[in-house]
Image 1 (spheres, one colour):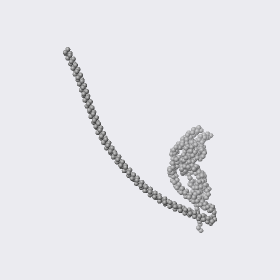
Image 2 (cartoon, one colour):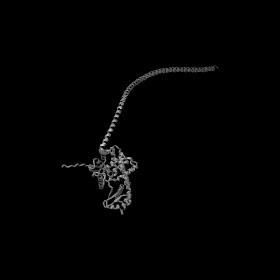
Image 3 (cartoon, one colour):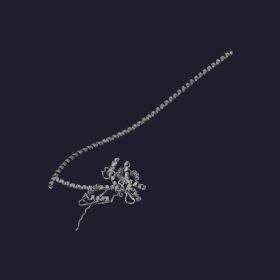
Image 4 (cartoon, one colour):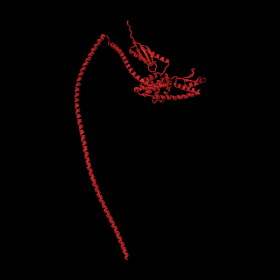
Length: 528
């Protein structure tokens, strides 16, 4: 019992002490936590006090800084205000001075105006007095003239109508003489100035262009190797030559001339087609109607292509832009057209170049002048197929294709058929004359040349007062000798102008013709 009880009592104390230790540990832990929390709270309070203190210090420092900056800004604004106020006060003082000075000037001007008004009133009074005196004198002069007129009528025994008639006749004669002198003087001055300037422009244009001499013919001559080939060209009973003429529309001339065959046609394109076809047949050697038709068709297509190429080359050489395709074709056809032996396409290109040179010298539109010059003879491409003169034909073609009014007038009026409404029309006329009149450009038959000279001399000798007339310089000038007794100096000018007008209207000629009227006065006396 004893040991068991003792063991139970020992175990109870152990438990008691354990519980007591646990409670003491818990109390110690609680006490430690309380002390630690108190310490943290104290530290936090101290830190908060330091933060508040620092914030108050920074706030006071910011307030002091703001006060200093505000005071500095205030002082700066005050200085600016004072300075601007001083400038404004100075400007106001200057404006007041200017106003005072202007008031003084206005007062002086008002005084001067008052003085001028008084002077004007005095002048008006004097003018009225002089006007009255002038009217009185005019009346006295009229009375005196009336008396003198009546006395003159009484002495001369002429009525007013007769005297007026005689005076009018005398004044008319004097006026005609003076007009003739003035016209002659003005014409001479204009000729001197215009000849000098036009000579300079034309010489410049001619010097800057060089063109080949004429070498074209209206009949093509083809060389053959033997007379046997002539027989093959003619064929059995002439069937080959008939087939060739039917296919080409030309005339084949085979005569006794050895070694040649001639092709004649008014249409230069057809003549060219026939020439190339004949050369090709002679070279091939096979000549019969079927072969002739084949070769002619081939050559016709080739020539059409050549026409287009010639037109394009002409446009490129003349540097003309934007031409219609039909105009290109017509320009190519001019390659096979001649005028007095001159190739019309080369002539057109030459006229285009000359027009540009003269237009540049005169300050005009060079490209437009080239266009007018290139197209001026476009009607000659179809003048054998269409009725009418080539200027009218060309104008109609270009109008349908939408060309400008300046181009149309240059085409229609370059031979003077219609009045010139554009400055480019006289340029084209001058360039056309230069191209046609230059040495080697054209050729004409001897009969036509002699007939033209006789016509010029006949026109000159048919005028009143003309004694003799001579066509010189290959028809470029007409020398006219007039009777000095029936023609005076003023009338000689009229005679020259009338002859020139008749030549323009009654004859056809390239370039221009100079008319020179000579009036010779011979005084003969004998010493005995």
